[in-house]
Amino acid sequence: MRKFVIEREIDGVGSLGDKELGDASATSNDALARLAPRVQWVHSYVSDDRTFCVYLAEDESFIHEHARLSGFPATLVYEVKTMIDPSTDRRDKLAQVA
Picture (cartoon, rainbow, N blue to C red):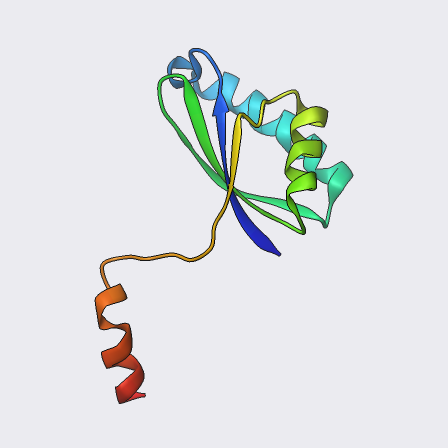
């Protein structure tokens, strides 16, 4: 499975309460159940008017199909090529020890 970050423009999403976010999660989960096992939601980050969602999917078409089924826009979709973090500069050193 490939990893994607989906930017969704949703006005006011950052001001939603737990109930509304829970309802949104349930709507997303219903769409995911219809597409399983080809797409998986990992987690999302919520800002004022956008969410940034991390998904695993066989290919980008399943991201767009989830958006269609759930009603949540996939404004921009990015495929993740690799990941870096604070330990990235030590990878070579760690590999030499192993």
